[in-house]
Structure formats: structure tokens, C-alpha cells
Amino acid sequence: MTPSDFKRLGLMLRKELKPFVDEHTPEDFYGNFGGACGFMSYAMYLLLRRLGEKPKLAVAGGIYVGCSHCWVEVDGYIVDLTATQFGYKKPVQVVTRPSEWHKPRKYEGRKALAELKSWNGRQNPLGSTREINRAVGRVMEAL
Image (cartoon, rainbow, N blue to C red; front, side, top):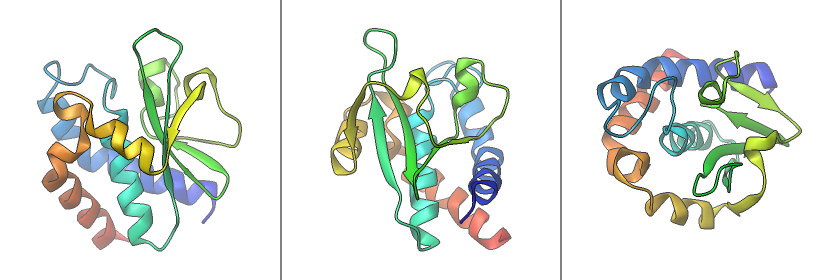
């Protein structure tokens, strides 16, 4: 897959999951996909796996104390569906070099998934697997 493929898939997932994220703002999320990084990254992770890719989840400590950030890595690319929460203009960031939000890396792979399980409310994507699987299914059907 190319970076443009990752962007297109990320945009499709954002469109499918935006109503859910909006419905749970401000209880669990906060505008511009803020707080939704684990939820959105897990959705992208599942989508890419269903498409035969080998993605991995990653979590960084973030630049604020007590703040973590999650994204997907695949084929040497960082795929971040929630960078807009940090003021980035492009809704899906596909880059090869980490930004300040991707440092310092704390967890990756299974350890990142275990970390996500400890997150509160809807920020823990495993509490919303029905919604995520439905959205992933709709994206798959549209391809």
C-alpha cells in the first residue's frame, strides 16, 4: 500500500466513526477527534489487518504529563487519524518521521493494546468494538 492508500482509508474511517465520536463528546472525547486516538487507531489497525497488512499499534507518552497518544505503524509509515486534535490541518497524517506527539514511545504491538485496555471510557476502544467493527465493515464494502 502507498501513503495515499493509507490516507484514503483513514479518511473513510474518520467519516464512518465521526458520528459516534461526536455523540460521545464531551463525555469521552473533546472536539476535533481529541481523546479518540486509541479508538481511531484500533479501528485503522483492524481495517489494515483485514486488508492483509501487518500494522502495529504504538503509544507515546506525549508532550504533556499524564497524556498519551496512540497511532498505527505499517510498512515504515506512521498513520495518525487524530492529528487534528494537535492543530494539524490534514485529517490523516501519514509520515515516516515521528512528530513531537509520537515521542517518547512507551509501548508498541501487544503492549500498546494492553495499555489501551486500561484507558477510561470510550477512549478504551475495546469497549466499543461493535461500533468499530461496523465502521470497518462499511469501509470494506465500499472498497
